[in-house]
Image 1 (spheres, rainbow, N blue to C red):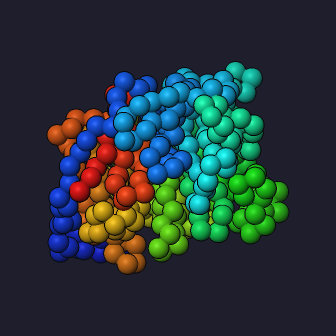
Image 2: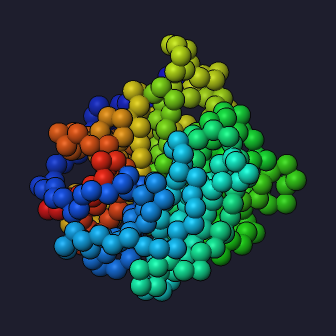
Length: 361
């Protein structure tokens, strides 16, 4: 065990437990497909995606759902489909809404980033901003979540597409977190701009399948959470140009036997996770909580757990180290997929059973 991990476990043992807030859980709506992404478009309406290829709006007061037209064909096979949805900070009616989805490219699937504007019950002006170089005939590990930082840059994640060497290959977008401007232009200060052996949109690499990505506005840092193989899910602090190790290092095991993936758990030049999970929780989302409704949760990381069916809560210290963990809503028994913080500071989450819930004080 390296020194950083030893420090983590000492802090975890000595740290007080996460103070349990007084909260209740209510159902907002049910009967949906698999609601994969959610974003607020005004104080009372959530625009959500369904992996099967539909997008809709739910009124959080009444639970009424209306579906939208204007979605192009998506490759809704395996883990692909219509994936994340997000709006820029300060979004107002008529502004761009951003989507990631799996797109068919000559019979193979790729992760694509697109945007459109909402007019009435239709998405109009759909534009593919970046169709990534991540083609695979398999249906696994598309990613993909979207996050905006405070400078207006857009980040989105692409999984390794089930092909492990992609994680260390800078000539593919697979296994990376990408950074572009919202209109698709390339930031001049991206770490691999001007390098012939690397794609310039790549911000970080060595990722397996990041299905959670969140910007911490207070501390100006980007967080991801990603699926490991059998064990080894990771929370990572994502920084410019850094290599997060997959598949050379991992805390997971092979699916077919009790053997470590790669050559071990650490290697020079490769980043260690802030936290890893053994066994896997199968994370489906990530949220940095910043609301006033639960002041004791401010700065905590929340992730939906698909396999172990709970809401995972991790408390960080000021240096960004994980010092405590709690597992909420285990009795609900739901595969928790997407998370979004509402204007009141309430936490909304979707489940693979087609429901959207809210956590209130």
